[in-house]
Amino acid sequence: MKRLFLHVILTLVLLATPLSGKENKPLIGITPSFSNNLIQLNNDYVAAIQRNGGIAVILAPTTDEKTLETYVRMLDGAVLSGGPDIPPEFYNQTPHATTKVMETTRFEFERRFIKAFLDSNKPVLGICLGMQFSNVCRGGTLIQDIPELVSKKVSHRDGQMYTNFHHVALAPGSLIEKVLQTRTTRVISRHHQAVGRLGEGFSPTARSSDGIIEAIERNDGAFGLFVQWHPESMKDADPAHTDKIFRALIEAARAQQDLPMQW
Image (tube, rainbow, N blue to C red; front, side, top):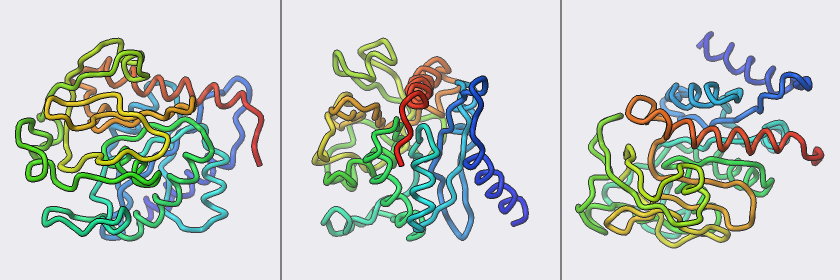
């Protein structure tokens, strides 16, 4: 508990400390998991941000509007991490038998934070749940269980962290194609749900061979890249894949620093 308290204090210090012109590493907030009263996050997210020139800031869950406003104002970019399922009532569906919803603390925080951050037009990278939650926050829906409701043609989840791979095809001319510089890529996958109806302002830009949407992007010109796979976990299998995606976010966030402050 003491270590957690010190980490939260460090987070607040980082958010309150202005960077000098020479220290222009962008601040990248990361949404963590929240389970059994513990804030948790796979260090792969933090390492990918740090390795590609950003400062990782783990965001303590909150519903306080002033704190949320401070998060959005002070951050240069955000990573929306993976995690459990979104309550289906949020997108007007009844729960499937396989749906295991996240704790209320995380849900109430992220539904507010994601909406506010998307509205800010600051650069954002959504990963797995982060892609699904962003889609739902913009009025989209989810497929609650791929094996039962779509097919078992592609293994999207096998319960392991780093061993479940499949291929996805990237749309020509899309941001993800430009970032990865390829039309197909092999990815690490850990999910049983997927985007159903697209939310407002998003376009699909990658699919797996069973038709599942594997990436979406903002179509209004703001940097918003959302992938169903786990690029942070590709650090050993394909480190260039990891770095290209996180570097694109960091570069967009660095450019964000040059824009006038909005209060």
